Length: 319
Image: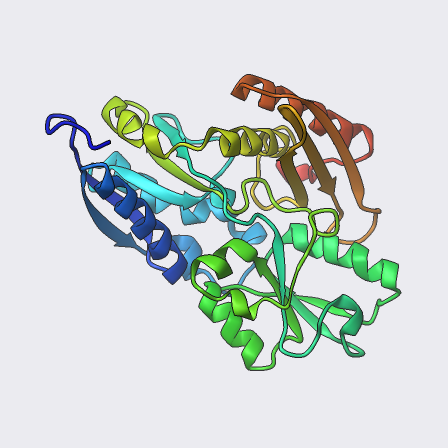
């Protein structure tokens, strides 16, 4: 249903200028226009897009992708910011709010390779690319099970097209990406294999879009309400609570993934690894009946406590 003319808003969306970020912003733009609002885009280049020669964990984490967008909200150049939720820090700055979580796309990890059907098919001394500490520790654990200590896991930075180009240039035998981004850009044909979550547990919020506003913009929060997908919000709230409780950094070697079971039961699994390979991978899980954000967050706290009890701990710099 379209809003009345008095409720229709002129909305500017702050977005990164990568092809995937623009797809996401255009998607939200179309939905809001369908509700009767007037929408324009403000494309921006963030610090995370500019620093490509170092891993995110060494330069401030994925929050580097959202800070410039938040400045645009703060000074009034934009009204909302559309983010991949896995890039959004667990604690937003004072004065900002997560106004909307939209229905989740495929949250799983994708194996992309022109020659290798999976880990077991990698050649001797093969090279796998990933930008994620989470994927690094999960891949290493899987490779250890296969007895493949010859395989190297190398950093892979850049937007989605850049990562695929580096693969096609032969720098890697395979790379691991989020299935959601490939599907949104019509690149599903590049996917050789999609990992079951039990084999490559996703990151908190992976595959979901979040929309950020200034906390005082009640008009925007109301305008975005029709885009909210509450089942997704409950899932990612549980996942993000684990991350927040474990130190809050988007660049931790942490996986957290929730999915619905029967009759409103939410199952939440988490994994923690040591990027240096000095300790084995820790995996825990729990489930509970969840109908509210508070209940989702309580489940997240329980799983975070179980992770710590099993030996997971943030690095000293993040404690």
